[in-house]
Amino acid sequence: MSLYKSYSPKTLWLSTLKLVHTFFHTPPKLPIAEKKTKSNVLRLAYIGSLTNSYDFLTTTKFLKRLNELTKKWNMTIFNIGEEDYFTNLISNYPELKSKIIYTNFLNKNKISFILKNFDVGLYFIHPTFSKTASCPTKLGEFLASGTPVITNPKIGDINNIIKNN
Image (tube, rainbow, N blue to C red; front, side, top):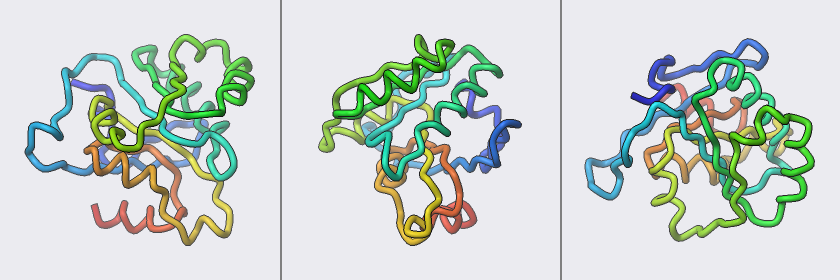
């Protein structure tokens, strides 16, 4: 059984962060949508940009708190072109360095096939005024692959998705 299943299906509370919402989507019962072998390690995925609208610093703080709660996790980042930013930021968190794999790879045609092998997707967005009227592509990519998502509220339709699912 994966670690995230021990938490409430709607929320995950970490004391150093605000309330973080998780989304669950049940994919169709097709072989292509089924998850691969389960393990006792929580496998997190992060796809796309780390900068601009995305708040990877909060993601890193979330991971630091997760690491205090359990050592049984790892994360793979699928990103192109921001390795220097990632390397500089993660150098401030040596306890996380061995837990995160940065992959300079992002094949948009295969992303749903890749994501189905992870337990949880993760991203945070700066809650600026313009983001209150948007819906992140990452959310759709995670949900389409049947992967639950940890993200922040008050971005586009995220609150409505939480209430209705």
